[in-house]
Image (cartoon, rainbow, N blue to C red; front, side, top):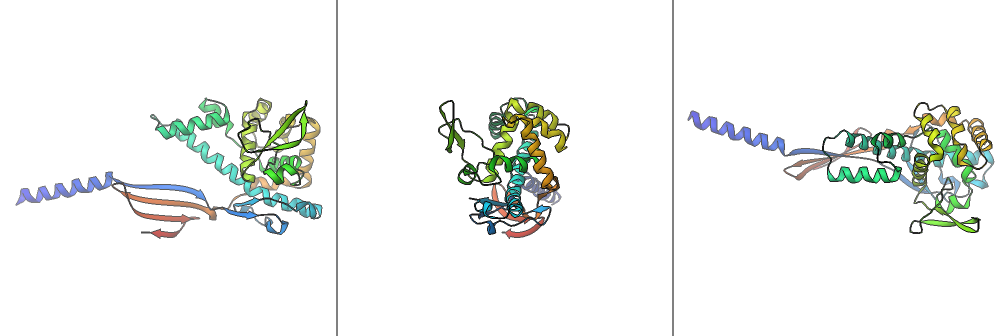
Amino acid sequence: MRKTIIFVILLILVGFAAVLVNFSIDKTHYIKTREVLANHPDSIELLDDSLVAPILYHEIEGIDQLPPEQAKLKFISALLPSILLAKHRIEDERNKIREILNKPIWLKEDSAFYFAQSEFYKTASGELLLRRMKTHPNSIILAQAAVESGWGTSRIFQQANNLFGIWSYRSGEPRIKSIYSRNGQAIYLRKYDDVSASIYGYFGLVARSRAYRRFREARDTTDNVNVLLPYLKYYSERREEYVEQLATIIRQNRMVQYDDYRLDPAYFVEERTVKLFGYVIDTVVVVGGVIVDDRQ
């Protein structure tokens, strides 16, 4: 009898251990975005708080029909959510690279992700990759976007979501032809799916180009806008005049205030998938820290 009880207890313990070994909770994080067709300025919601709703605006038109000050506010309100979404994506990818670098053994998907990021940022060095994946103040991005897109009125922006006049050198990628040429050669510019993708591409350009090496070095040590701006002089053939224009736009439009703006955590979603022996037994959806869906 005693041996039987001991045997039953051992079976229970072994079964419990098997459950523990085969029990897992997989977590997936994303942001609940909202897409808005902004072919009329009234579609753009003005910012009224430092916590920004993740709205992706498409086909932004009509801003130039507004009074100048109102047009600028609409432009900033349309762009800032996309800037924050692009920066959030880069920060997530940067954290994933950091995790991979700390792993003693890489999985196949780890290597694939690391290789893709190395290709995009043009470096195989883990330390340099992490440095290149840094971002900089929102005010600088807003000012450059304002200059390069004419405050959202340029054809390239309205037709291709290209805020920064980024060129295309590959015929196989989405692009549109510029009305200008250089040395008799046609110029093509990248076409993006949305404004956030354009900003992501801009960060990649600044991270890769040798012209912005000193800007990246300065960005490693400070986020002071006045210190960083002079290192962007090679973004334009106007050099110092371009830098002064950026500084003036930032100052006159009080853009530094937007450096503290961030995405509203109420739109952050976490899906928790509970698995036992590889089978899904429950899925819990958490939005802004609150369980909103328990799919049993």
